[in-house]
Length: 461
Image (cartoon, rainbow, N blue to C red; front, top):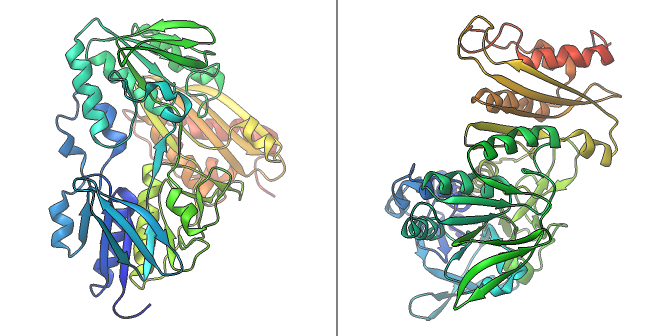
């Protein structure tokens, strides 16, 4: 790259701003321009449910830094502007000002696509376009609109949430905190269908029901009935459900329109395929965050994982390489978590059924154990599953559900081992801390390892 280089970054979310900051700090001579169709930078979509429920008081609190912070760093922010054309041959793009409609062109030396993901809701159910009481996440203001509408309805009104994944469950929790009656509708046969095995999902579902939330599974949405731009009910394969407001928490896809214009290589999900340095199939174009596919460290296959922690790391790697410091993002193992009402659920790697589908012969153990020493009052239980490969003893994945935060950190321990190709014996020998108020002397992870060692033996040779 030349000493003076213009880097244009499309997208001002976690990945885009991480890349911009890093590229400018490492090489101040870089001319770094960030373009985004919204007015927000460095924003946290994951926090929107907590804005709805009131735990986060103001939308600005979800910004890691305000725009002025990046301007002070010498980054040229062009917000409320939408890129409509990109030409890989001339290395030019055209963007339109959303307020005035005026168009401008811009040249780049290096381009970064951090365009994120978009909702498929209007594509799945076109009738909801323009419906004033149907909401889905489009931009940061979406959370504020959901909150304001829910508050305008008041306690006792009915909110229907479509989808029982992370976003749907967290939205349901926070809408219930506002006093609304909540119904969750899920097309598949359980809550958290892409995260948890059925028996663990049932623990989550039973707890949600105990809070007065109606849960309907196995109910595919067919259409919404709209009267005077207002949705009155949703028709599903299991019946019709009325509501005063509807929140669609299902169906996102990579926002890849510009990638298609650039002729970049895309994966099965439609995400941009990147290498370890976050380069695309065009040597002058990088991509980071939810618009990309990257390597799964357990299977070696390409995956699409629109997770915030991954986006931030990718942005850092992109910015490092643009700043002249060689950096790599090796991949991920699929670690995720949610908290809904009293339950914490987390997973990493593969389930046993997923492992079988990609060619492993999995061995799985399940257990329930305490999270504190047995003589300490107030302890709770954790339900834990760990999967390993029968041939090698290599760990393949884990899931946990519990009623305190230890379900989260125990899965993070397994995730660390998965990242390094850890085994059943590594799970046993890891030097876990012990303190009676915080954990039992035989940690549930060690118990899981001991159960697995009944199959694999006490030592790896």
